[in-house]
Image (cartoon, rainbow, N blue to C red; front, side, top):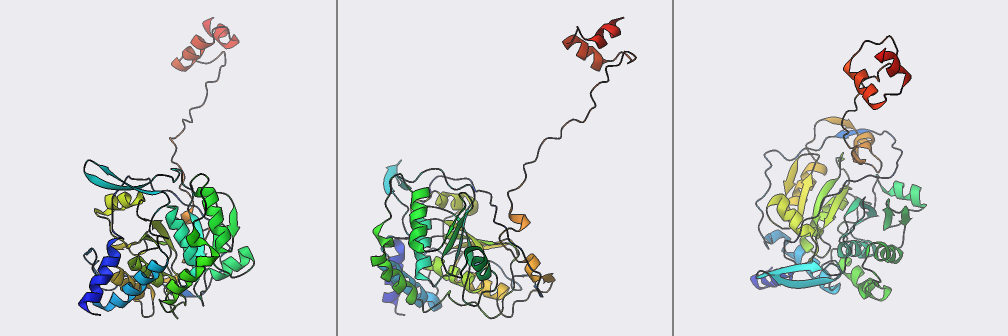
Length: 379
């Protein structure tokens, strides 16, 4: 790609930059039930030898990824502002600084993150991801690529058919297919008061989502032939409109790796949360609790995922695949128990006339002077 084309790509991406805002607390998660059947053994994920996370570089496009980023940018232009701005996006200045925020989104969020079963290349799934991003909701994503063996059967079991997207909201017991119905539910439940579903989610505009997905030539649609399972979901910070984040999501989908998606569209308060967490805002940002790796840079994130979970991954420790692969309902994902102060187990005093005079009985008699025990005691 020419220098001029690369410059155009950078210009397209300039709108998708960071602005720190207010912090929001991270939330605990619990999941729905699932019966897990033991299967063959697999390997524990391990990062590549001598691996070190790359240095983050803002707006940098690695030459071998220039075409990918350009495709994602053009696709986003077809989708206008969907998945880029939060609902009620506004700008204001404070102390000479430009502040981005939402003037309409409710402050309350779901107590438990929603669960979205989808695959990256599906245009209807894209619409739901855009709505989730615009409503500033965090979701637990279960990729269901073609050929997937972990979550497609779960959807078929719970919903009756292997169709995507499929959304589960444990906060309200909602579960359903059909992108339009899911989006209407999200806006009705978590959107601004009296908010209408934007035109970009209408059937008349769905062709643009299909076009945007087709530009990526099916990336994120098919599961790779061999993967190493992840015991716990990864965490991805980003937003639907970023072509850099899309590359990371494609890799996660193709390797069937579940992940928490922390949405960070322009105007989201979670931009400041990420900056507080790592010292800067830049997406995608990936954290892998299975290996302890955290990193920026989309191209390197894709390489890390392939090297750690894909064909030829160097894991060595044998683990039961289905018992250790994360599934909805695994015990680690339940809301943590609140630690309680130990309750005193001192036995209550026996108010027997023969009891020896002590401080406990004295205190009791001070509070209950007319009791039979205390009258005997006083004698």
